[in-house]
Length: 76
Ligand code: SF4
Ligand code: SF4
Image (tube, rainbow, N blue to C red):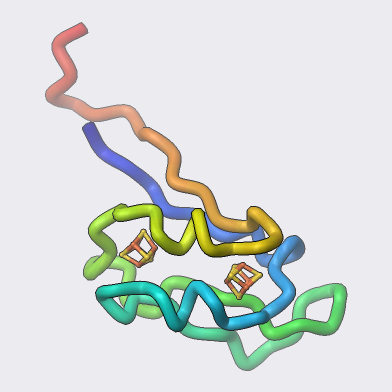
């Protein structure tokens, strides 16, 4: 099963909690503001993400999600 990590930049308030808790140092805050005037988090090193979901649990604004994606090897 493949997974995709996504951050809703417009929900993010730039608190940095996800950046701090990521065990793989995947996340950073952008240098550009979102529409609400916050610097939103993004995946600076997406290849290092292990989809542990710690960042999703920590985010107070529920801005991060991990979604299953179609996998070529799926048999069902
Ligand atoms: S899912 Fe885990 S490894 Fe990936 S960005 Fe979030 S905390 Fe980091
Ligand atoms: S924890 Fe949520 S609100 Fe805070 S920086 Fe990360 S994505 Fe944004």
